[in-house]
Structure formats: C-alpha cells, structure tokens
Length: 103
Image 1 (cartoon, rainbow, N blue to C red):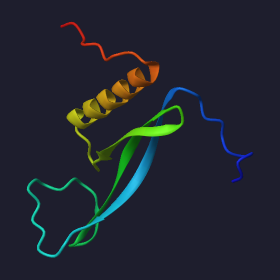
Image 2: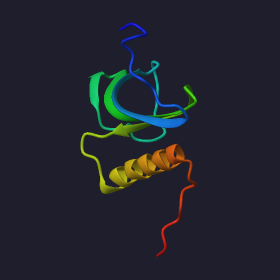
Image 3: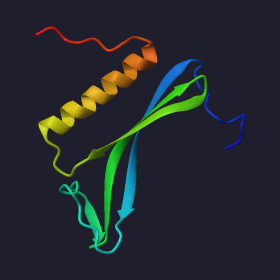
Image 4: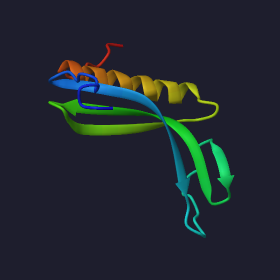
C-alpha cells in the first residue's frame, strides 16, 4: 500500500477496534498464579487465543492500547467488561468524561 492508497485518518482523537490472535509461550517450569484463559494450546508450553484490541490515537499518535482476551465460552461478566472498555474508549474519543449511571 502506498501513501496515496492509505486510508485517511481523522484528526483529533479516534479509536481503532480490531480482532487479534496472540500466541504466548511459557518458560520451562512456569506455574501460573491464576487459571489460564480458554484457548487452543499448541503444546504444554504455549497458548493461542483471540482478543479485541482497542487503540486510542490523538493527532495521529498512538496514546493507549488495551487488549481484552476472548474466551472460548465467555461469561456475562466477560461481556460486561468488554462493553465497559468499548464505552470508555468511545467517550474518550468524543472528549467526554465517563458518566456514572444513576441507580
């Protein structure tokens, strides 16, 4: 892709949301402190799984990046976490502070 073919990026703040697959290898003798997320194991020393990357840009420069793993069988809590992250990113893009919902 040449510079002329590159997509036009908006000025100011904007957010990119995309699916990404990651592969993690563990050192020999690695003992996790918590259960590992659901994923496809390539072998006993590695794990492969998908997630959503939320990246914030300000005036063309990357200023933040969050990666949220997607389990094979996501729970309601996983869904709520993702929705919260997307909401925060879009409010940041709009230049508005997050608002607390009234109970």
